Length: 250
Image (cartoon, rainbow, N blue to C red; front, side):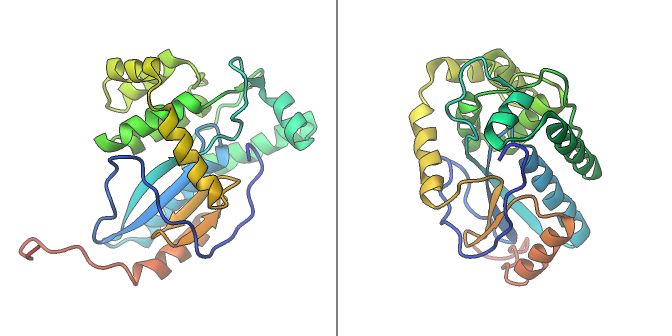
């Protein structure tokens, strides 16, 4: 959902389907596949909570994160829609309720080190091209950096992440080639792959985000809070095989 946290749950989740060329699970790391949208505030809040939980866990535990596409509003027209109006139509929220929800989101973001800068007239936009760019970035190892940069672009920098020029510039800030990013968006050749990828997760029962799949087995929905993620990491870390040492044989 755009501004409403999804219901918590944990159980057997869908098998992972990584973007073409993305690296597989690494020894000594917990694999986390995150289905999300770049205009979903709870998606970045949930990830930052998970990140904070990892720091609190300490030790040598690592996370290997892979991002997967989900469009909150796949039918959103090119010009987007004013956010308060959109939330009223989709969820029945009054302007006061919408403003209160954004205040709470901003507070939760600040608590985990992320800045939300909501503003009057902010628009919800179509994110299909952003997901194509993320798909393109996966084999380079820069997908995570791009995802973080896209969240920052939309929520902190107040930029339109449906604008190809903004998307290409964001790719440049994430360490990718801005010209190549612009060419990928102009060609649109990754659209079909992204649609297949989105359909896969919907077929697995993912209808709200964030949806985090731990170790390709356990599904956790919604932004669960630092303590809950810490508990998950503690339980899963006991079963994670150690990474081979410098002198080990492969």
